[in-house]
Image (cartoon, rainbow, N blue to C red; front, side):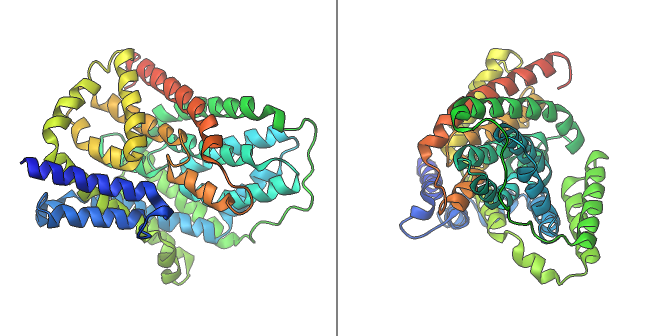
Length: 417
């Protein structure tokens, strides 16, 4: 028994170290490879049986991710997302207005289209806009990264860890959004105020002029219209309580038919490596949960104790922030989801986990994939330092997690949770 516990802990540590090393991995291994290695080792080393490994993979979550990727990819191909992002960063008259527009726009788009995709699209546009307006890029790049994380907390489909929570809990898309949208709005305001307070001296007063901004991608109006209609149908299905994985797959199928484009182009753009990463992490998390059940079982009641009181809920949020940064938020949610479902006040804990694990991504540069996407996209023109991000991240994470936890506690007292 002890040998299995040591093996599970060692495999999990190896996976985490590879994820943390990223591009600096000595064998050039990335996150998907880390998940695959961990999943295989869990079976080969006898921590899990083959049947247990297959059962651990949540195909509903993978289906939800795949369906969303297909639909969002058509929004990218049509030029719809690029046009929205372009208008967002070029329609501002002052540096302050541009910063706030970016905060709100990135947050709202992330709630609708997944934060990683928004960051991937908007990073080059932010760089172009700040370069042509002769503005410092750093505050706007940080606004993009942090606000996309904050905004993604508002919906089940805003980020991968929320999708996991949506599949594991009894929260519907509409019920989740009804509680989390007010929290997201408040936290976007807080995050914007933090950025403004830290960078106010670097943002010049007065009007700005964008000197010949690059034009956005040409808009395919027919494909964009079809994409919007499918997205509206998907949103309606979510609001009516349809199973999210079935709704997302159905939307993907409809989109493939309506688009009248070679499907292989869409399938080639799907992030298969992310799906592989999730499948591997499901197996790794199941192995750790099985082998380390004793100490997790002792620790979790302490962390979830008296969460109906504000002090207990704050303790759970603090533990979630620590765990999300120690293990990364997706693996951390995978580890906890099997233990939260039967816990007292599980509905409140699910929402608190969604908020705290997502907002924890703003603590450091490596706290979320969205941060790394922005940093990687800006590296050639304006590298983001770990410490510059941390200066904003500490204050933003502390204040937004505090605000979200207090709001959730208030919702519970009012009987909304």
